Image (cartoon, rainbow, N blue to C red; front, side, top):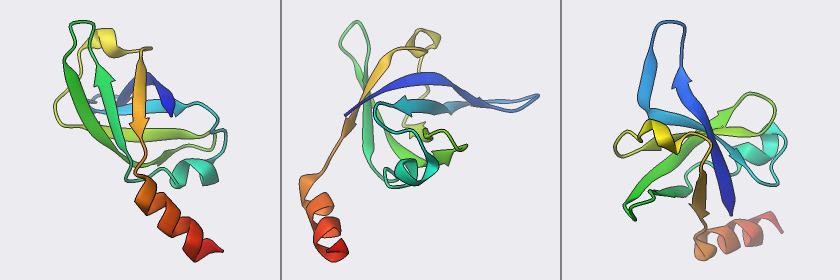
Length: 99
């Protein structure tokens, strides 16, 4: 699953350097975004360095998610893509419980 980094998580006077807002392809509402909480996210730099993070929660009503990375990403990461990792065993267990 792919996503796009939209912006740093910020307030009027502060910017949180490890927190980013990510738009996920195919997710357009808050309910779907909340299901992604806990999934791993990975950003790959042009030089090949990988920085990973975790989706913490949804942001707003349009399907954005908050991602907390291990270290802060560079400014060039804005508007670039990220890869959202799925762990099939957990997802299958959730599906079985749902059914």
